[in-house]
Length: 116
Image (cartoon, rainbow, N blue to C red; front, side, top):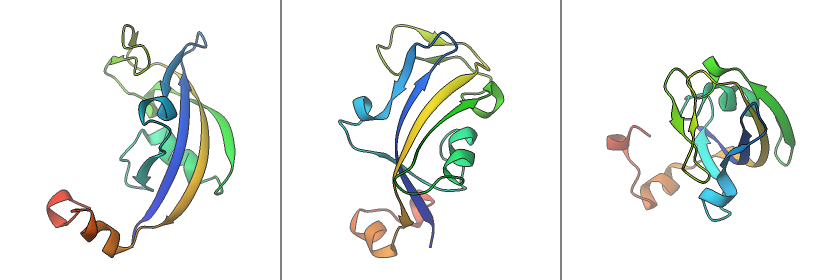
């Protein structure tokens, strides 16, 4: 059974501009992902494995572990771009860490075809 993390994250560029806010993007619902499967940036995956449920941490993410070699549009106020290989600073709150039971996957239409 896979371990899942449920997190709220704010990301800032090197000038301190907010470039990502999962609460804003997901209507206050946490972002969730399988831990260790690199479904999110490598930096998030590494950080969450060092955190405990309920913990909030601020960490710097070098460009090669963050958004990578392609420029990305800001997810907040969509008018600007995050340059390729940009260093970012994240504030992450882990709201839950748990195993996702197979029955949840089945009840929500997730199966082998989805690679989950």
